[in-house]
Image 1: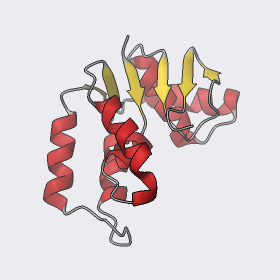
Image 2: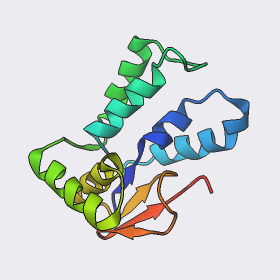
Image 3: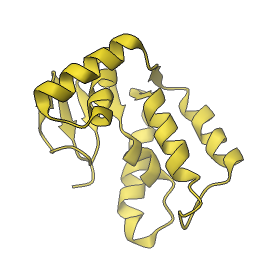
Length: 136
């Protein structure tokens, strides 16, 4: 079963913050699996946040791009008109932000039944996708 990974998992995997050691280990463990899926949105969000100048452990462009290329070994859902339209429906029905709804739409499009994220309510089911906060 393919499991969808949200941006925060990718960001924790590179964290050098000593208070996030446990989260980093969990994130790396999740990314060691082959049954992982992402979306272009997740990859874009990672790049923006990981290279942000105000981030204390900001990555240089080249390293961030290298990580993105590494993660292309996973299934990656592109941003398409059907994904956008599905996200708009999910936003309305479940009262999510557009960006969170787009994550769910991408996960659903790839056939994922599980979404690893700390940005949703743990255990909540949205459109057949169960939210799992691996850091709780």
